[in-house]
Length: 88
Image (cartoon, rainbow, N blue to C red; front, side, top):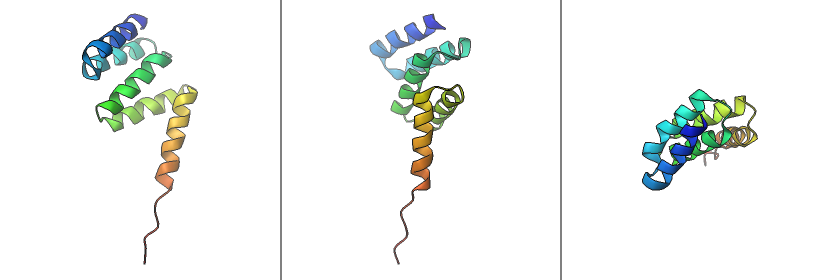
């Protein structure tokens, strides 16, 4: 997993997130506990506007006990529960 993570980071720096995303996904598929790869994948998915996949990555990280993703999921749930009241 580490080789794909390192390659993904190099590709991300050189060519951006789009070609790096599959490399980060492969790193995580090979070794689910790769926190940095998951964080980089999450960041890339958000940067390309794929919020649904980013949320799925965050939820999986949260399930694995990764505090950053537990925080992100909690923040998103809190934001979803705060809706402006309709004016009358």
